[in-house]
Length: 249
Image (cartoon, rainbow, N blue to C red):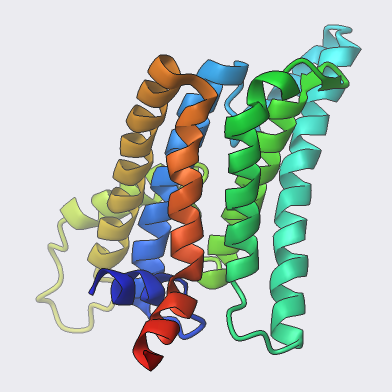
Protein backbone atom coordinates (compact mmCIF):
# COMPACT_ATOMS: atom_id res chain seq x y z
CA UNK A 1 0.00 0.00 0.00
CA UNK A 2 2.71 2.64 0.80
CA UNK A 3 4.46 1.93 -2.52
CA UNK A 4 1.14 2.07 -4.38
CA UNK A 5 0.38 5.44 -2.76
CA UNK A 6 3.83 6.87 -3.48
CA UNK A 7 3.69 5.72 -7.10
CA UNK A 8 0.38 7.52 -7.57
CA UNK A 9 2.02 10.83 -6.60
CA UNK A 10 4.48 10.84 -9.50
CA UNK A 11 2.66 8.65 -12.00
CA UNK A 12 2.17 10.16 -15.49
CA UNK A 13 -1.56 9.45 -15.03
CA UNK A 14 -2.64 12.40 -12.92
CA UNK A 15 -5.71 12.91 -10.73
CA UNK A 16 -6.69 15.99 -8.72
CA UNK A 17 -6.01 14.03 -5.54
CA UNK A 18 -2.51 12.98 -6.58
CA UNK A 19 -1.75 16.60 -7.57
CA UNK A 20 -2.90 17.83 -4.16
CA UNK A 21 -0.93 15.24 -2.23
CA UNK A 22 2.22 15.77 -4.27
CA UNK A 23 1.82 19.54 -3.85
CA UNK A 24 1.55 19.19 -0.07
CA UNK A 25 4.62 16.91 0.00
CA UNK A 26 6.74 19.28 -2.06
CA UNK A 27 5.50 22.31 -0.09
CA UNK A 28 6.84 20.61 3.04
CA UNK A 29 10.17 20.04 1.29
CA UNK A 30 10.28 23.66 0.13
CA UNK A 31 9.54 24.93 3.63
CA UNK A 32 12.33 22.80 5.06
CA UNK A 33 14.86 23.99 2.49
CA UNK A 34 13.80 27.63 2.70
CA UNK A 35 13.77 27.96 6.49
CA UNK A 36 16.66 25.60 7.12
CA UNK A 37 18.64 27.08 4.27
CA UNK A 38 18.36 30.51 5.86
CA UNK A 39 20.20 29.21 8.90
CA UNK A 40 22.85 27.74 6.60
CA UNK A 41 23.40 30.55 4.07
CA UNK A 42 21.56 33.56 5.49
CA UNK A 43 19.13 33.85 2.56
CA UNK A 44 15.55 32.80 1.89
CA UNK A 45 16.23 31.15 -1.43
CA UNK A 46 12.66 30.98 -2.76
CA UNK A 47 11.73 34.62 -2.02
CA UNK A 48 12.19 36.13 -5.46
CA UNK A 49 10.00 39.15 -4.65
CA UNK A 50 12.41 40.05 -1.87
CA UNK A 51 15.39 39.41 -4.13
CA UNK A 52 14.11 41.78 -6.79
CA UNK A 53 13.17 44.46 -4.24
CA UNK A 54 16.59 44.13 -2.64
CA UNK A 55 18.26 44.56 -6.02
CA UNK A 56 16.26 47.73 -6.70
CA UNK A 57 17.12 49.18 -3.27
CA UNK A 58 20.81 48.38 -3.65
CA UNK A 59 20.99 49.94 -7.11
CA UNK A 60 19.52 53.22 -5.82
CA UNK A 61 21.83 53.16 -2.77
CA UNK A 62 24.83 52.63 -5.00
CA UNK A 63 25.50 49.10 -3.71
CA UNK A 64 25.97 47.60 -7.14
CA UNK A 65 27.67 44.36 -6.16
CA UNK A 66 24.87 43.25 -3.76
CA UNK A 67 22.33 44.29 -6.40
CA UNK A 68 23.97 42.10 -9.04
CA UNK A 69 24.20 39.30 -6.47
CA UNK A 70 20.43 39.44 -5.88
CA UNK A 71 19.78 39.40 -9.63
CA UNK A 72 22.11 36.42 -10.00
CA UNK A 73 20.11 34.48 -7.39
CA UNK A 74 16.92 35.36 -9.27
CA UNK A 75 18.55 34.08 -12.47
CA UNK A 76 19.51 30.81 -10.70
CA UNK A 77 15.86 30.30 -9.66
CA UNK A 78 14.62 31.07 -13.18
CA UNK A 79 17.21 28.74 -14.73
CA UNK A 80 16.06 25.95 -12.41
CA UNK A 81 12.50 26.42 -13.67
CA UNK A 82 13.76 26.50 -17.26
CA UNK A 83 15.62 23.21 -16.76
CA UNK A 84 12.44 21.57 -15.47
CA UNK A 85 10.59 22.69 -18.60
CA UNK A 86 13.40 21.38 -20.80
CA UNK A 87 13.56 18.00 -19.07
CA UNK A 88 9.80 17.39 -18.83
CA UNK A 89 9.09 18.49 -22.41
CA UNK A 90 11.97 16.35 -23.71
CA UNK A 91 10.63 13.36 -21.78
CA UNK A 92 7.13 13.88 -23.17
CA UNK A 93 8.36 14.42 -26.72
CA UNK A 94 10.40 11.22 -26.58
CA UNK A 95 7.57 9.31 -24.88
CA UNK A 96 9.41 8.47 -21.67
CA UNK A 97 7.37 6.20 -19.43
CA UNK A 98 8.04 8.35 -16.34
CA UNK A 99 8.28 11.98 -17.39
CA UNK A 100 8.62 13.50 -13.91
CA UNK A 101 11.20 11.10 -12.49
CA UNK A 102 14.29 12.81 -14.03
CA UNK A 103 13.50 16.17 -12.39
CA UNK A 104 12.89 14.65 -8.96
CA UNK A 105 16.07 12.60 -9.24
CA UNK A 106 18.02 15.72 -10.24
CA UNK A 107 16.63 17.59 -7.23
CA UNK A 108 17.52 14.66 -4.97
CA UNK A 109 21.06 14.52 -6.41
CA UNK A 110 21.58 18.25 -5.85
CA UNK A 111 20.33 17.97 -2.27
CA UNK A 112 22.73 15.09 -1.68
CA UNK A 113 25.51 17.31 -3.01
CA UNK A 114 24.31 20.14 -0.78
CA UNK A 115 24.22 17.91 2.29
CA UNK A 116 27.60 16.27 1.72
CA UNK A 117 29.75 19.18 0.51
CA UNK A 118 27.63 22.24 1.33
CA UNK A 119 30.22 23.59 3.75
CA UNK A 120 32.93 23.46 1.09
CA UNK A 121 30.67 25.01 -1.54
CA UNK A 122 30.00 27.91 0.80
CA UNK A 123 33.67 28.86 0.60
CA UNK A 124 33.29 29.61 -3.12
CA UNK A 125 31.21 32.44 -4.54
CA UNK A 126 29.87 33.89 -7.78
CA UNK A 127 29.26 37.66 -7.65
CA UNK A 128 29.62 37.46 -3.84
CA UNK A 129 26.90 34.75 -3.71
CA UNK A 130 28.06 31.46 -2.21
CA UNK A 131 27.60 28.39 -4.40
CA UNK A 132 25.37 26.85 -1.72
CA UNK A 133 22.96 29.77 -2.08
CA UNK A 134 23.02 29.49 -5.88
CA UNK A 135 22.37 25.76 -5.59
CA UNK A 136 19.35 26.23 -3.31
CA UNK A 137 17.87 28.93 -5.55
CA UNK A 138 18.26 26.61 -8.53
CA UNK A 139 16.62 23.71 -6.65
CA UNK A 140 13.70 25.92 -5.60
CA UNK A 141 13.10 26.97 -9.22
CA UNK A 142 13.41 23.36 -10.36
CA UNK A 143 10.83 22.14 -7.86
CA UNK A 144 8.34 24.97 -8.22
CA UNK A 145 8.26 24.57 -12.00
CA UNK A 146 7.74 20.81 -11.66
CA UNK A 147 4.57 21.01 -9.55
CA UNK A 148 3.39 23.94 -11.69
CA UNK A 149 3.62 21.82 -14.85
CA UNK A 150 2.16 18.72 -13.18
CA UNK A 151 -0.88 20.59 -11.84
CA UNK A 152 -1.36 22.85 -14.90
CA UNK A 153 -0.36 25.93 -12.87
CA UNK A 154 -2.92 25.27 -10.12
CA UNK A 155 -0.33 24.53 -7.39
CA UNK A 156 2.93 26.21 -6.42
CA UNK A 157 5.00 25.15 -3.46
CA UNK A 158 8.01 27.39 -2.86
CA UNK A 159 6.27 30.63 -1.85
CA UNK A 160 3.06 31.38 0.01
CA UNK A 161 2.20 35.03 -0.77
CA UNK A 162 -0.23 34.06 -3.53
CA UNK A 163 -1.60 31.21 -1.44
CA UNK A 164 -2.33 33.49 1.52
CA UNK A 165 -3.92 36.04 -0.81
CA UNK A 166 -6.24 33.38 -2.24
CA UNK A 167 -7.04 32.15 1.28
CA UNK A 168 -8.08 35.66 2.23
CA UNK A 169 -10.24 36.01 -0.90
CA UNK A 170 -12.05 32.72 -0.29
CA UNK A 171 -12.53 33.54 3.40
CA UNK A 172 -14.09 36.85 2.38
CA UNK A 173 -16.45 34.98 0.06
CA UNK A 174 -17.21 32.46 2.77
CA UNK A 175 -18.41 35.05 5.28
CA UNK A 176 -20.15 37.25 2.70
CA UNK A 177 -23.87 37.60 3.39
CA UNK A 178 -25.95 36.99 0.26
CA UNK A 179 -28.95 38.83 1.68
CA UNK A 180 -30.79 39.13 -1.66
CA UNK A 181 -30.35 35.54 -2.75
CA UNK A 182 -34.05 34.73 -2.27
CA UNK A 183 -35.19 37.58 -4.47
CA UNK A 184 -36.25 36.64 -8.03
CA UNK A 185 -33.95 37.80 -10.78
CA UNK A 186 -30.91 37.94 -8.50
CA UNK A 187 -27.86 36.42 -10.22
CA UNK A 188 -24.92 37.76 -8.22
CA UNK A 189 -24.64 35.30 -5.35
CA UNK A 190 -21.12 35.09 -3.88
CA UNK A 191 -19.92 31.53 -3.30
CA UNK A 192 -16.62 30.48 -1.76
CA UNK A 193 -14.53 27.79 -3.41
CA UNK A 194 -14.19 25.62 -0.33
CA UNK A 195 -12.04 23.03 -2.11
CA UNK A 196 -9.56 25.69 -3.18
CA UNK A 197 -9.54 27.18 0.32
CA UNK A 198 -8.84 23.77 1.86
CA UNK A 199 -6.03 23.05 -0.60
CA UNK A 200 -4.27 26.35 0.01
CA UNK A 201 -4.58 25.98 3.77
CA UNK A 202 -2.99 22.54 3.44
CA UNK A 203 -0.14 23.93 1.32
CA UNK A 204 0.58 26.78 3.74
CA UNK A 205 0.44 24.41 6.72
CA UNK A 206 2.78 21.98 4.95
CA UNK A 207 5.23 24.77 4.13
CA UNK A 208 5.24 25.92 7.75
CA UNK A 209 5.62 22.38 9.09
CA UNK A 210 8.50 21.77 6.71
CA UNK A 211 10.05 25.04 7.83
CA UNK A 212 9.97 23.92 11.46
CA UNK A 213 11.59 20.60 10.57
CA UNK A 214 14.19 22.23 8.33
CA UNK A 215 15.14 24.88 10.87
CA UNK A 216 15.45 22.22 13.58
CA UNK A 217 17.57 20.01 11.33
CA UNK A 218 19.96 22.75 10.26
CA UNK A 219 20.28 24.10 13.78
CA UNK A 220 21.24 20.78 15.35
CA UNK A 221 22.70 18.74 12.47
CA UNK A 222 23.81 21.24 9.81
CA UNK A 223 23.97 20.50 6.08
CA UNK A 224 23.68 16.76 6.61
CA UNK A 225 20.02 17.23 7.58
CA UNK A 226 19.11 17.49 3.89
CA UNK A 227 20.08 13.87 3.26
CA UNK A 228 16.74 12.40 4.51
CA UNK A 229 14.91 14.84 2.22
CA UNK A 230 17.06 13.75 -0.72
CA UNK A 231 16.44 10.06 -0.01
CA UNK A 232 12.69 10.70 0.29
CA UNK A 233 12.71 12.38 -3.14
CA UNK A 234 14.60 9.42 -4.61
CA UNK A 235 11.98 7.03 -3.24
CA UNK A 236 9.18 9.27 -4.48
CA UNK A 237 10.61 9.51 -7.99
CA UNK A 238 11.32 5.78 -8.33
CA UNK A 239 8.06 4.58 -6.74
CA UNK A 240 6.19 4.01 -10.06
CA UNK A 241 9.08 1.90 -11.40
CA UNK A 242 9.44 -0.05 -8.15
CA UNK A 243 5.70 -0.74 -8.08
CA UNK A 244 5.86 -2.10 -11.61
CA UNK A 245 8.80 -4.37 -10.76
CA UNK A 246 7.08 -5.72 -7.62
CA UNK A 247 3.85 -6.39 -9.52
CA UNK A 248 5.78 -8.53 -12.03
CA UNK A 249 7.47 -10.62 -9.32
